[in-house]
Image (cartoon, rainbow, N blue to C red; front, side, top):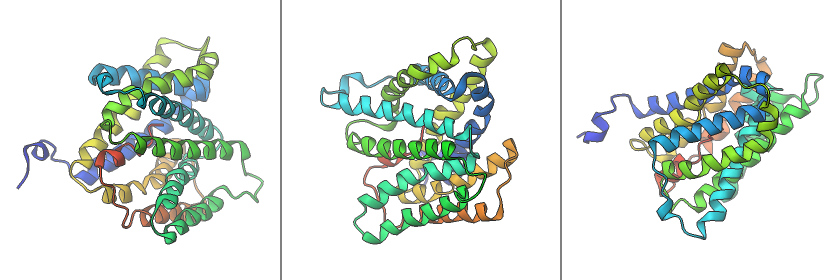
Length: 296
């Protein structure tokens, strides 16, 4: 029997999760024009700042629930979010979107493998790494060490984000945490973003940044929250393993980034590793899984 909450959302939960992934990757693909105008850090700063304003307008930050010992973790989580956003946007300025997403995906996969109770789980980050090698092809002339380096930095930041989120998972719900940490992320991005964007701001750029802020992080988070209310965290995590594939798809459709056959094989390895890493990976609190999604 359906609950009243589920009846209000006729879309199946997997459809909500897919829509969230498409929103993330579409927001990333459409960010390239803004990056060319105000730089990757400027884009991150604008997107996070406007996203923070939107979140603060619709969500009441749980300030009364914040304890003194929570403050360092919340600040570190906001800084990690800001660095992840800057690094990922800098990466897609140099390398294809799908490749950047696949490299960034190594962060949560490594955290899952290290924290797993099974040593066999460590094989999946290795499989994903093999896929990334096929994607980047470091032996080829077209290898871009700068873009790859930024994507690796984004992966480290995403892994850090997950660890910090799980540390305060018992204290706050997902949307409450975002309303606290996204403003910190915006301030973090401002240190580099304001100098990059200075002199290039216009009403059109601000409008574009506002639209991108809706695509990421506001809309995906809302969709993921609805999806997680109606599916298990393991099923959600397995479905999210498709995100590198959506990165390739949006890169192809929006940016005309055509992957080679060997790169497609690499993406499939990353997706396989991400899906396999979720087997038996139950998490006790759905909102922890919710927060493991990248707000970049």
